[in-house]
Image (tube, rainbow, N blue to C red; front, side, top):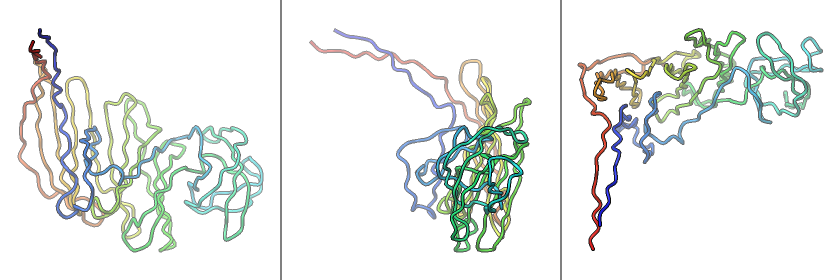
Length: 315
């Protein structure tokens, strides 16, 4: 007696990434799971990366939040213009007690909150508008000077993403406007941010990932902090449609980077024609500088097929 069953062979249409670890950074633990995404997250352990979602307006906030701006006004009452109880420095920790009321200020509709914090050893309470706080604070030794700095990412009223660094070692706050992400009259109101630790690239990096509303276009930006300045270390875009796609696969090493750029076209028989180019970069002064470019390599990826297998049973 025998039976037939069909085994669907899945043929990867996008290349999975090579390991992001070279011999110089082999202390990282490789992941057993292959990961393939349009943002090209390498296959080192995901546990090493801190990941957060930054929203234009948060539906809710946790009990522990941070000042999204420098010297924000802690108010005596839940309204703009009320007496100032204290000034709260950038990235300072705040305890959120109770949401009070909703109000629109500028282009943001958010809640006023009753909050508590400690300023210069003194506990103070008052009220803050929701957009002056953020649930995320990325803390590491960003500039490798032996002291930790805090980074904050927040949207302004124009839906532009602002990055702010509180550098206590230099008694300085640094900020950069990363701009708005607009396509087809749609402006992004959410950004994924990822902290890549020093072990990955030789210097901590912040990665920004943004996608358009129909998930066909993707922005990626890497930011570094060095010599009291924020730098756009690397930028690229990716796209995908039914007929074609472009993807970028980064392979990090110690202060060097290889980018594999893939341009793919789906052909009439279901196969995919890929043109692959590899580019080599070195990290200099917080910015990736292109040094080498390979000759284009053309590959044909076969279409997904169905194979019939016979499972024979002996009597």
